[in-house]
Image (cartoon, helix red, strand yellow):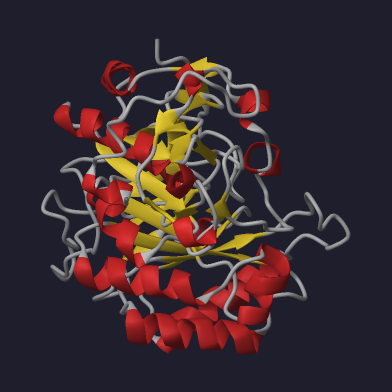
Length: 381
């Protein structure tokens, strides 16, 4: 009865509704199986570690996946909360075609419940509140080419929950030579991650904290599956990986927790994977928590570099020194940045340092691009 074999995924959705949505909005989903022992028509989602069990007409925690007549459906296929051309550094990715533009979009909903969510108006939205843009995979791919974007990014909310839509769009983009980026919380099952990440060229994964208590109380999730995803991405795939940790005062920013995070990072992911420490600002259900002082990011970056990580960045603050890229061999500055703007570029066309010949880890063009810090709202049509 599992839909992974493709039998359920190809069946026509019945002409009824889920929460008043027309049948045309209900896209057959994968990554689920029937649970007849739990009751008639019960199904279980296999996409993320929540493993939501749903009766007919019920939606999962993420809100965008539901049980429709005993089948799992995705309610956001072909729909988006909007499209923007962004700098790739905003994802943040500093070692994946620096200076290039990326066509960014998301849908609605999320499979985490972070009290500090910085995009809560999208991630906590009901899809009929936010999804005004309709498109096709081919339309998005053509728009990326037309706009001169080297890549597309599934972002703003987590792409894992709309995996079928992301995979379809990624296939169309790759057919046109456009790279694919997932900006994600890494909360995905072992059984689903192979198909999802096979569609991605790069990923920035949020490592939101480094204690189970933090994930449980502030994200309504677990740390373990995220760590598993990170290790698997690094060891078993060719996906270019960067990691972001939002440092929240009094919650995950202590020197001791940063030391533990960095020690695990160095041991499991190695010294070359870029790590971004970014500043929190009061939002959603944590408006009583102060913004992260820039000094906290500077201190965390210094800790990570001292421990042996080679590419550590600060974000959401003005810090050109902490946002530039340096050679892991001789320490010379290779790519200057001020925020999202790429300045002086000393990287050779083959991706090596002109002073010592050390190869910089990442994916680079022969020459820099200069999209800058612009954010351009666009339509794929």
